[in-house]
Amino acid sequence: MLRTRVRRRTASTGVSLSVTHALGAIPDYYKIVPCSARNVGRTHVVIGTVLTNTIHICNSVQTTVTVDVFCWVYQGRLY
Image (cartoon, rainbow, N blue to C red; front, top):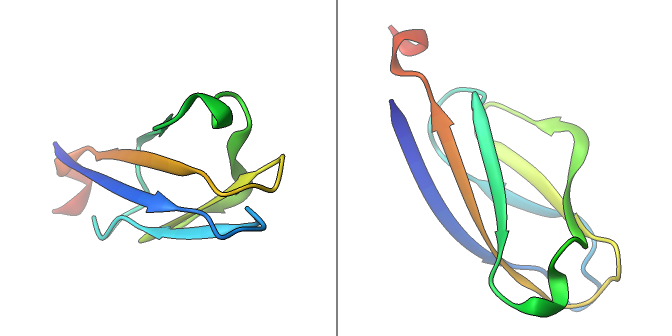
């Protein structure tokens, strides 16, 4: 199992942040974890944008937030 944790901060508008996880595959599982109380429940993954090396996230309140993005890929898929 391959895994990664990436910490990113959205811009002041909070709109669509591209997070590169660099696992080389579409993640089997991912989790967005807020680093502050003001973005709990407000930061989400944009539907249809979980790609091979990137995930696009958005903050619905359009404010600056910091999130940790955790991704897991089952290693058997890569061979």
